[in-house]
Image (cartoon, rainbow, N blue to C red; front, top):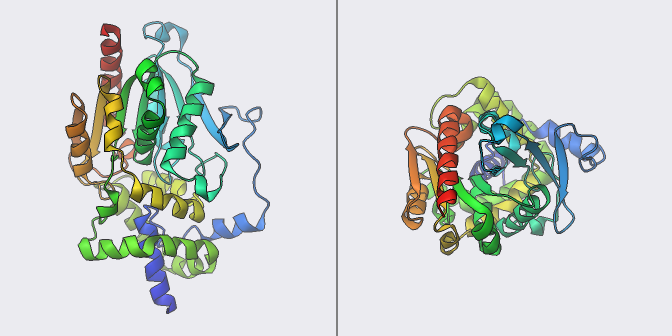
Length: 354
């Protein structure tokens, strides 16, 4: 394969993963990571803002907890809101919602999923949505052993909530008062063409995992790709993540999250995303207040997936955000905060009536 074709395949493959790294600016990070010793797990005693929850297979999961002011919390029912980010992102994707939720009197728990952000890495075989469901059960048990819980998941985070419900229907039935699913899907992602058209979309699915594997083995390919420049990187992140223009600072913030995710982690998660089929699991959410938020220009998880969730979750509120893309918490943060607060109000009222 020529170097040019190899770079094209690499770019397509990573774009399929939602990483948008064809510009290759992650090269220096990958090279540095291989030259220095692996960083130790986050020590909760050294972190001012966070703590570590140890998963069932020993992987340290980084968690941050926001406690509400006692006076404000007294007006609530002691609800904890668990915020779960998506593929190649971190808990920072919720930075614009956390303050609003805490100020409204709710306790907030944010987690970095395994292999993402400050959390540790597991075996590649552990990078499955099923394992993420088990991880979330552990996070809830260790950070919120009692009291009502509202679950909020974006993209892969929403899929992880479905896995949690599949594995722990008892927990959902007895403690969960609401579920918010943002830019996510119950299945059928193997048919998504990422806005590239059917033919090119098929090529993306075929080349994606192998291209990412080559990228992890050959960081020198990224050195060549970097000559393309940041303009291409910005254009790809923009196209795959947002429905319209966003401030440059937002674009860079998201890119930093994406490029901090190791390539082998990105590649290892791809199969579980394509295989995710949990429509039957959604019945576990029956009778629970449910919110679905989806953008009309979401190229990674098209709006049809949100509409399908609304069909399957009777009584769910579907909020369609026109001209918005995949990363709604960053693209339209005020709308997402407003809808989440209204959802939490409804969830507490509904729980009180049951």
